[in-house]
Length: 442
Image (cartoon, rainbow, N blue to C red; front, side, top):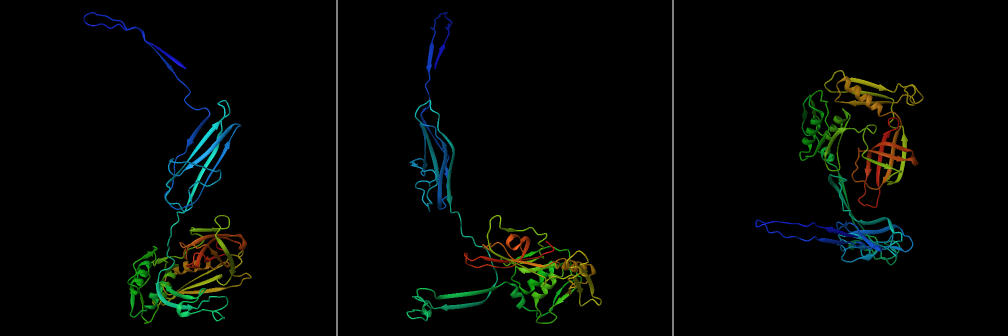
């Protein structure tokens, strides 16, 4: 297209009244087509790689190509210094497995057609993927304690088939065995720090002042028997000891048992966790606790084996709590029983009356005894529901955690508390979790 510009005559003047004229001026501009109608290209933004080992890559695209058109896809692993022809659904050329030096990948798409009047080619979608091994070794505490036993074992190996005693064997136990099997193994047995407290028996009386908070009392007892302990996790409680308690009046008493009884008196538990922290907290309730992990057959299935057991071994419908304090001449007593006629464990029903008697030396108040009786009864109704699962090791879990299990094959669906767990040091072996709840209270 042409453009024409014109200027009018300008007549300037100076002080001497001299005049001159500028003739009209004209300008003609011409523009041509600024793009190639037969072809063009597009270059993507960089896909930045952090330097972790490459484990795989893929380039894939979807196009619409009218007759006489084409699309070419190329990749570059050196920021466009050179280009490689890519194959649809193939790997990025020259980006090999284990590569840690390539820092970016870009894509160039070239589109062409035969005639400018032909319909253009179209790229509907283009995808570039690079997978990396960003995993790192992660260590999690699965136990903390003291070594109390070490066992060394030597087994002779064999250079051929059969046992070490067969013909042709080269088993030499003192040299570590033969070509297959044999060698030396060391088994190290570790117990948590509760053993150190248990073995440090009371040698002289230890007094816990009356009106002292239960949490403070437990910490004082731990520090008295294990002065090196520094890590504590003590849950708050409004309960205080009703009276002065003296431990160790009888030499040889078990301090750890005394700590456990003090915790049980208010529905708490005391233990050392896998990191060596002394924990004093309410006993978790699967009905109210928030699950920290879910094992489900519907999403992220990692359960390789499951079994479930229902038992009435821990089922009671009549609970009697006795506060047998040494300073009280009239011990307090409280009862709780299943008085619901529609319940399967109704105290006057076919199940019969099954009584559990529990004695607490630190209970001296009637309301505390009744609270304990009600709590024990509630957690005793219904069958003991125990689910044992073998799972891909989860080092972050520990006994006392609340988890959710859904495994229809054994009809397990709900929240459970981990009672115990077994974790192998071999990553190839599954982890065993033994989980518990009362079937009625779910």
